[in-house]
Amino acid sequence: MFEEEEEEDTEQKRYRDEPLHTEKIFSDRKTFFIDLKANNRGKFLKITEDVRGRRDTIMLPAENLEEFIDALQNVSDALGNDDSED
Image 1: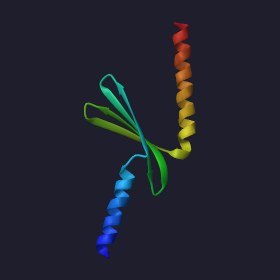
Image 2: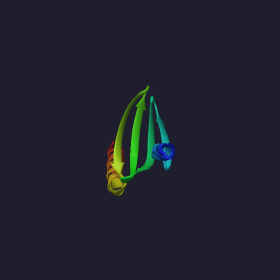
Image 3: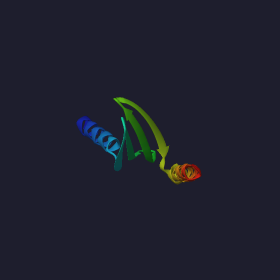
Image 4: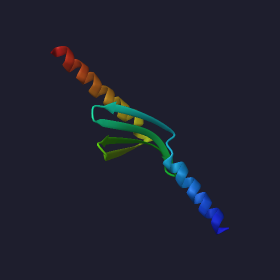
């Protein structure tokens, strides 16, 4: 019985480690990984920046995703406005 529980734990860990969806962005020397993941607390977005093997990561709960996207759109709009003023 203990072996069955251990197998279930291993399967659950594998499930948690696997992204539900992933995107990769290449930019100069950096690579950005955008992963939609899930764990026992819910879904979340994991954004990782890899620069020559050094990684920095942020986690964003799924319920804040729309607000995050809106903020990025506002920054993008501001950037577009700055470009038109040059």
